[in-house]
Length: 141
Image (tube, rainbow, N blue to C red; front, side, top):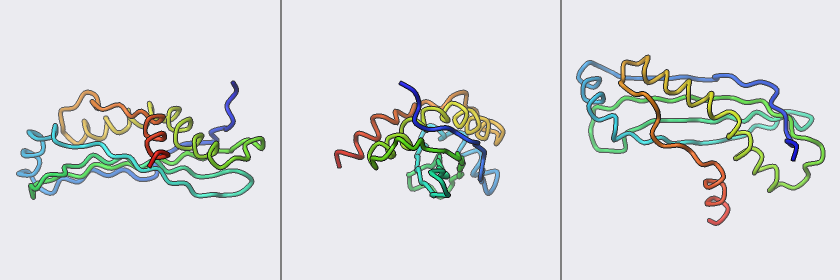
């Protein structure tokens, strides 16, 4: 089965690591395991079946502590969808699963480097994202 889309380009649109002070840094360093990885995918139609897909990863602590760091990346992918794709559900699956599966290894590497370069001891993001499963859960809601 051939792909029904082509990635024209991909790039880091926004990258952020915020730790307000040394006390917060020391606290977060000890409690980084409590942080959760969140993902949000949005699209912006451009022209001629070309769209901008923005994949936002954020690593946040949902707890009550006032000492928190913020880690976030918005990764933009410019995608051209083939003419043969007419069905809206098929287009959604391409954007939410196929494109994400293709870009995620690079996005994950950049995000892990952001954490490491921000001084936090992380080797790999523990939770792998199953885009197919997320897509199917979204459709069943």
